[in-house]
Image (cartoon, protein in one colour):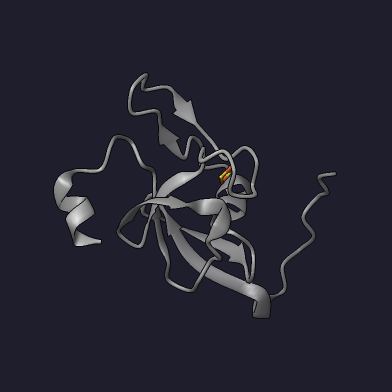
Amino acid sequence: MLTRRSKISVEHIVNITINGKLSIARAGESVASAVLASQHFPTRHNPVSGKPRAPYCLMGSCFECLMNIDGSPNKQACLVTVAEGMAVRLQSNRPSVEELDEN
Ligand code: FES
């Protein structure tokens, strides 16, 4: 069951950027949770159809939450915990060979 987020106390705030915009997240939550709470949808586009996608299962099964996290493409945002200064970006297409070689 989904519940409303309570106010976040200052000591539990983590600053991240989502598509270049500063956003706050709750320490210990997943990137997918932070992205959903910040209403940054979609998180990626299907590389074949181009249709927008967003996190669905939030437990690592559906792969709908693939995002570029700190420069690494194809990261399952629901399985990555937010960290101070983390840079999260929409994954709009298939990663280039150069992007994959970097990681
Ligand atoms: S939301 Fe399903 S794998 Fe991440």
